[in-house]
Amino acid sequence: MSAPPVIDTLARDAARRLFGAGPETEAPARIAAVEALAGGTGASTGALRLYRLEGGDGFVEKHTSSALEYALARAQLADTAAGLSRCPVMLRFLAAAPDPAGGYRLFMERLEGIGDNNGWLWGAEVALAEAAETFSQAIAGMRQRHGLALRPAPDVFGRLARALAGSESGKEDQIGGRLAALQAALAGYPSRPAHNDLFWPNIGRAPGSGGLVFLDFALVGDNQPGADFHHFAKGLKKSAQHRAFFLALTARAADLAGIPAGIIRAGACMSAAARALTRETRRGRPEAGQHQARRFIDLAEAALQGDGPGEKKNGERGA
Ligand SMILES: Nc1ncnc2c1ncn2[C@@H]1O[C@H](COP(=O)(O)OP(=O)(O)OP(=O)(O)O)[C@@H](O)[C@H]1O
Ligand SMILES: [Mg+2]
Image: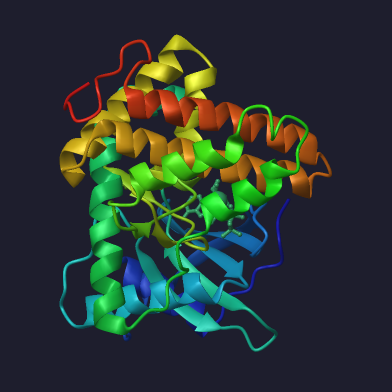
């Protein structure tokens, strides 16, 4: 379905920037078509548009209500203007401005291969761990340079303790004590910037270089080490292939962060537990959320003990 073409100054600026051209250049401003782009299921996303340029290139406009995503776009554009090299793992923004009608208009490069987990992400465990580490460090730098207010780390343990203490089997399995023990085990590892929504629909490939690139920054914020892999922790319950992916991903992430793999895996599982609770409660199924959260808590405990098949003991390195 085609949206009516909206080609204004901002869109033309984005087209010029895509080609690294000056404002007087005419050629890159030739936008052949504007189409609605599938996607945009997130709470903060309005419209997504693809601008097709003559010659086959294109770029994307996202309308968002996320002030954080806008702030990150502005920070990246300011860094580029100041001559700093862009973090290769962060989607390249071309232009960004508040929309007088509300929210923000973000223009960005068009990525390839988004959501294509079967096509290419298998085998990319190491690349993904490295990309997540690079991204975290880049966001830390941007926060420092631009005074960005990132989301604080969520109170995962408090949330789980409150929700599970009252649940049916809360007393039998002494969930409070188990959560306290997990919290104590993770306490020595400080929060750091995380993408927080890292999974197939938010990971693409850069045009040309083919490197992994993250998009969708509405949830960027501090989180416990490993939290960024919460979507992949679901793989522990899916198949041997998914499980192996998670173990290799987190082994490399642990090496990069210089902390035990068990801590990274437990962090991912605890984050997955809290997210499952939130998601299922929002869907009106709090009991399903509690059930899923308990399974992730079991997996977090197993990860800390390093007793899962194919896992290394806490403190050991490597896949
Ligand atoms: N730059 C891009 N290049 C190619 N496809 C894109 C691009 N930006 C978005 N898309 C497509 O649109 C989908 C949704 O975009 P995005 O992830 O930014 O929004 P969302 O999931 O609705 O997010 P939010 O949580 O920010 O509200 C992506 O999964 C992808 O399929
Ligand atoms: Mg998304």
